[in-house]
Image (cartoon, rainbow, N blue to C red; front, top):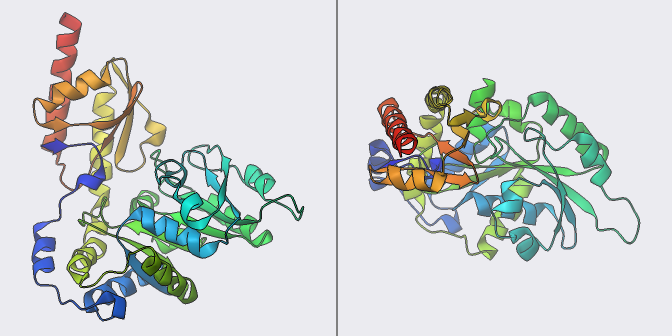
Amino acid sequence: MIDFRSDTVTKPTKQMCEAMANAVVGDDVYGDDPTINELEALAATMTGFEASVFVPSGTMGNQLSIFTHTNRGDEIIVGRKSHIKNYEVGAAAVISGVSYHLINEVKGMMPLEEIEAGIRGMDIHYPNTSLICVENAHGTGVVLPLDYLQKLRKLADKHQLKIHMDGARLFNAATYLGVDVTEITQYVDSVTFCLSKGLASPIGSLICGSKEFIYRARKGRKLLGGGMRQVGILGAAGLISLREMTKRLHIDHKHARYLGEELDKLPEFHVDFDRLQINMVFVRSSLDLTKLAEYLKQYDILIGGYKGDVVRIAIHNDIEKADIDALLSRIKDYVKEVNNA
C-alpha cells in the first residue's frame, strides 16, 4: 500500500529496527534505562529545556502537561480547531478537571486581543485562567510565526500565565521557518513533540520543560499508568528520529509542494497553498472524495482525512516521488472515467 492518510503511518526504518533489537535497556520507572535516559537528555538539549520525559503518545504528552500546569476547576485557553480540543476525547475535563475557553484561530493563530479578552479576572464567579495552549505546526498545515510567539509570551507574562505548545510536528515547523527548534520553544513553558509522525519512530512522544515541571509530569505519567519498564527498545528508535530523521523533513515538504502544484493543475481540484507549509496538502475537490478513495484503494493507494469536499494528503518518510506520481496518474484516470460516464 502507498499510504497518504497521515504521517502517523510511517514504518520504522531498517536502522531503527536494528537499533531496537540491540538496545541496552533497564527499568525506566526506576530510572535505570540508559537508552531512555539518553533520549530524554537529547530531547531536552535540542529543545532548550532542562529536562524531558518519554510518553507513549502525543495525547498523553498534552494531557500530562495540562494536568501538571493547572489545578482542578481552572480554565485553559485553546484554539477551536486545536488537537487538544477536538481529538483528545475531552481528556482535559476528565483528567485535569479544567474547562476550555475556545478561540477561533486565524491561520493557526488565536488573535492576541481575543486571548487577552478571554483571561478571567478576580470576580468570584469566574474560574481561574492558568494556561494558554498553542499548536505548532498547526493541524491545519500552517506554522506560527516567531513574532507571534514573542508577542504571546509577553501577553502570558503580563497575566502570569503558562504556555504549553502542542508541537506534534515541531520539527516540521522549525524546518519550514529555517530555524533551530530552540528559536520556537524559547517562548513556551512546555512542549510536546511526536517521534511517531514525520520522525518515523513506531511509538512515542516527549514532554520538555523545567526540571521541577518534568518531575511532576513524570509522577503524573505514573498516575495515568504510563510508567514503562524496558522501554529503551523504543528509545533506540527515538534517538535515530532526533539525530537523523529531523534532518530530512525538508524532503517531505518539497514532495508535498510538488503534489500540490500538480493537483492544482486539474480543474477538479483546488489546493490551498496558504496551508501548504509543511508535509500536508489540503485540497478542495468537486469530486465525491469517498468514491475517489474507494477507487484508489483498488490500486493499493490510500487517502484519508476528507471532510466534505476537502481532503488532506500527507507526505512522510515512506512516500517517494514515484509514489506521488502514481497517485497523480490514478487520480487523472479517475477524472477521465467520471467525465466520460
